[in-house]
Length: 168
Image (cartoon, rainbow, N blue to C red; front, side, top):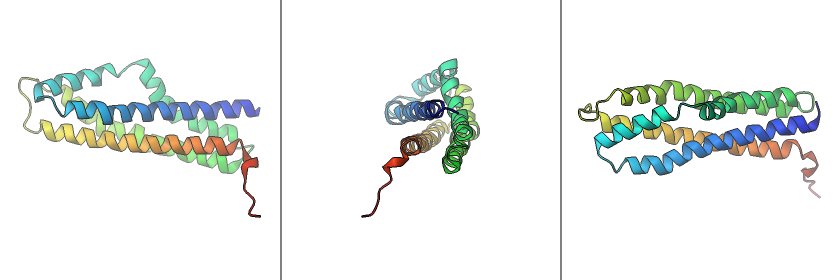
């Protein structure tokens, strides 16, 4: 493979990780705080609208693309650097486990439960569910930011091996 194809795949992976980190962080540190200040009926209505309206091609492309892209990097890197290929693969596994599967098993069930609420007749545990969802999203924020930083570090070091420091 040409280095430009390999480096482009790394750039795309970093970009997708960055977009997802930005998405989760923006929600965690802006939307969540605003939603803590509204009454239950407003929370139920707005949170359901957010959950429904995030389901579009752009979001799915970034969300699932970030799960595929590091594995493409791993495949493209294997002939040049087995270490880089393994690290891209590790980032991919971490994303699949910590974002995709975590979302499927933690956030989505909470989303579906929230969407089932009648805003005028909330369940007694609505605040607890809101807090659970917020904590889960804080986890996704921290996890995705870590993956973004890791991918950025890997990208910048994978293609600039001459930056090794000599102790002299």
